[in-house]
Length: 241
Length: 311
Image (cartoon, rainbow over all chains, first blue to last red; front, top):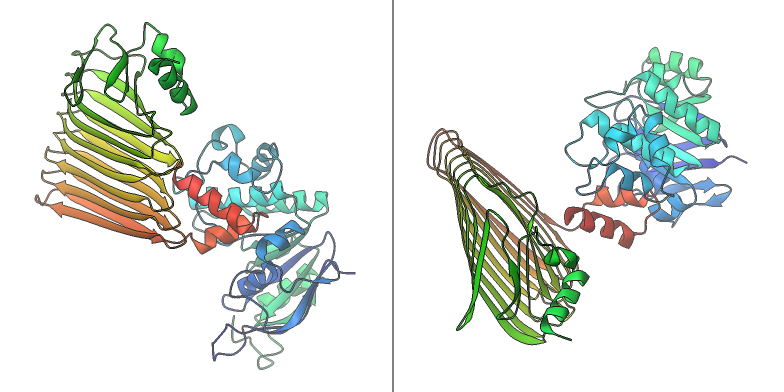
């Protein structure tokens, strides 16, 4: 049984007359698997992450999400988190008056903060008492978000474009984080639009126009993505790349 | 139990360290209602307080070029359910001097209590004053707190305050600080208030940057819930070349509470620059979602956000 099974998922924003952002999407993520989701801007990658996480306004219009074989429908974000699903947003928010150590301890036991910081290349002595506020650079904030994911020890970690941002994380940093998840047996949904990042994964899928248009080895999917070829749009070149 | 013992016990409960009041190397002033309970000066620090017909008069002077190693502790309170405390305070930090004040204002049983502080503060040239005031109020909301301060900061002087009222019910707060900053001076006014029930929070901070290259920052953080009201006015004037000021107000509103922010920025010299930012509203949705993705319930997430901004 897959850890997460997404079947025939359709998502249209409430009240919107536009086409579905997710259009009869099928995807399975296995236990302990790192699954890269490749796709250009606007193809629905982040939307899929919000739907899985249960964010407000992202209730599926059709289809189902099964986690450990049980439906996620109706569960709020924190209820999903308590089942082991968590997420690092593409642009993490800031928190005034919350130290890095406190932030990394939210929802988990204290003491995991230092090792999580080290895994994302941050010196705990320099960061644990800093605030998770505007005093951090964009890159520092993203690293801390990844560290918080590690500290939570989730069963499924959704990483929404960990490589994006003004102060980009290096591929090596991301590989380190992914390796740590793998060692712990966590599954990862790695959302990216960079082929080289996708190569870290065990498997990959390409999202285009709200649908998974191909799945397979990271090399195969990355190659497909690189050619900008989409079999669903018009059979030649993807409109959305 | 004596009034002094009562006050010390309440002081400890409010987070104060009663031992410092017995430390001969630490200056302090403690008053319960209109009774002066205890005071002490130390070399370079003169504490002169007396009971007047309608309150307490206190003059505190830090002598020229004296840099006090230990903070001066102030403890004011009304421990009964009803009462009035009126304090007239004159603080003079003389040229080149430096001092930190830690004030605790304690009203744990207040049902009908009025605490009025009228302060005139002079921070001399190159002098520095740090003033931290923490209020400890009880659960009844029967306190009226009216602190008024007029502060003059000399050339190269620094004046930094922190006002915190996050424990118990606010009652009615009407805080009114005006600071005039001289050449190369630095002023920081910070306030954090958490209002509940029918609390009424009014904060007016004004920084007049009159000296060349004077710097000023007003930072206010207010959280209100239930039927509380808050109005925060942050005034900064840039009146001299090179003056730089900023007003930063954040108010989080829950339930039926109502908040208002009035930033007033005025520049009277083309070489001055003043900026402001204000954010009022419910708890940020993205912050909530992020914390909930850590497994926190919505209420736990709100608590983390509110405690953070009031920290």
